[in-house]
Image (cartoon, rainbow, N blue to C red; front, side, top):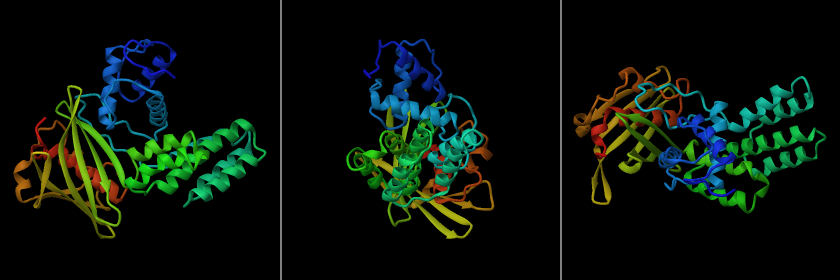
Length: 351
């Protein structure tokens, strides 16, 4: 596929426009790549920490396709939303995308091809701990007597299931290395494996990001949890006028302080030249309880003076859990960071 850019036209541009609309970028679907399409692509690239070129190569084209499909099926929540909408809808409980596809295959074939439905159910119920274990089942599937079309669908969903099982709780260095592994040593995972890898870089257990609007500015953050540690790195970017700027960089800690409570502390940091200097005496504490639908925030030290409630949201919404029924460290961090960016905006570097 030729790279899509300003002036491009045709069926591929029309598909791209369709996917952009699914992801929340409301543009005309006229099969012509114009300034509005270029701006939407740049906004997307900024929001997901990709090179901001305004052009769509084959790799990015496939990424749009995957995320649009997963959005329609409920497996992905796009970061881009319509500016000015003062709503923070709770997200559904996360699910392995491969499992969702297997469940769909099972439902579709339950009456027509029971053997396919049973295979989908069996694979969805398994828990893979290594790629080798997954490869054994993948090879067995290819040798089975199932109809070719359904077998291809099952194989694609199985690859995603395997990768999310094995790498769903991996750390950034492991996820970064996975791309080369798929492309060189474990080529049987292609092409679905590359889609799964991209999803893992965006929203896995120990490496995830999210974003939302505040007063017309789109804030996007990334959290990278450290191996064998309660500490994580937090990076916040602001997207305004098609420009993305780092507005906050610090560390946070997430401590399980009991079977029903998690304590998340986000430390104050000031931008000094090219560095961010943290203060462990000034922080925002958020208590995340299994028995409550909202966090209990408490500013400490100098953080107290940095609150700014002029964000346009209902106060009850911003303390509500991002995923209402999920008691996990990841959900605790996401809820605390969302609250911090919205209610303590004075702590961020001015855009």
